[in-house]
Length: 294
Image (cartoon, helix red, strand yellow):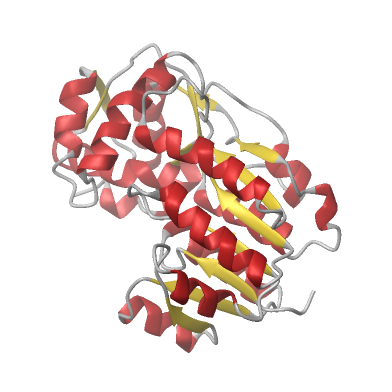
């Protein structure tokens, strides 16, 4: 598969891992970024073609998709995903896109009260209706989320604060997500993937206590899990500069799905697609343990 692949969300967590994977496979890559900055310059130094684009600007999407056959669609965690997906689908159809791997989320369901989850639900339909080879990936909780959710309080107090003490949920290493994305994007048999909705789970499921215990083992420090209310958790998360009002509303509603067991999933999807077992949550914390220690 020698055609150029477009990666959107190229400077994000899964975008960066996916680009690294594709470069190892010898793929030709174009990256769409919202802002040309130091991160985009690093991509150019790797030999990636970088183009500035906006999901809500049809002209830039047409430019980004010109000459492309396969693409990874990863919309930023903001509102207007269905609108951006519709623009993307229009430009993709015009350019004859044959395969679109799209980031969704594990708990997509019609009864969700989260605006972000509702957006993913309708976006999956929009991409399917567009006939652009849509494949939907629905990952569990990102291990990378815990850098901000747990890092500062573990480092300062040896404590991990989170709601839903009885909840059980899967945590997935973002590199496993990107392995799945890149393997699908470079597949010689895309027909077996098109139309699929892949639930991407980690190697096991966790409770809040088990998250704290895992982090503690990695950093060789006793880490205590402290249950708090969902409202307390959301208010604390608002201190993170990346948590906008839209994401805060999602977290409030999304916690109900965690509590109801919609993330209590283990499966073989990562292994079936990539050929390897999912990486552990501990392995991700190991990579970034300096964020959890003094």
